[in-house]
Image: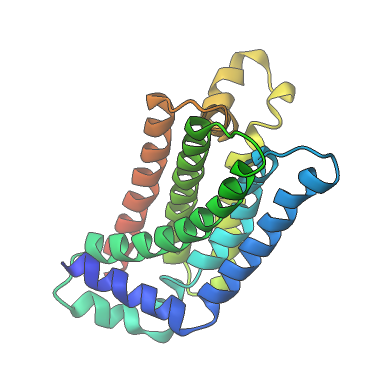
Length: 233
């Protein structure tokens, strides 16, 4: 119940300011452009280009969404009020985390309109589309956990954004540079990076190993955030 209260508070904060509207509109405009490009330029009706773009979009949008969640509380001093209320640290963290996941998921699910639009021009693989969007939302949830952690360690929202971006970018780039990695470490780098896990869902595969990968990262960063708040308390 306390988690739900924090969740509703954060959602109201998003939508009572320009944050949610700017994020949603920008996300849809950019994704719409990259959806329409292969249709009108290379004459290919597919959402693959859009799905491949999501990790790159998340690198910028998710740190922007999460950077204020704890940083603003610390800067204004309201974090002290939160800590004195009958709330557990994990309830605060989960409430804020779920609000960011909700906003990211909202942006992603609104792009399902493009898949529906494509269905009028040809047959789409429903199973592959569902798996792709499942992978996208799991990746978004993982980046949100990283963003929450980054926001908890500093009062400065810009620093929070940079820390979150660097961690997410590291996971993003590992899969791209594995050809430069010694063969003995390729399997490790491949597992730690998001590429191989995300690519499976894009191909229509929902592998339990990929789910465990995402959930492990989410738990890790939420737990570290919990430890940070406990130490500050």
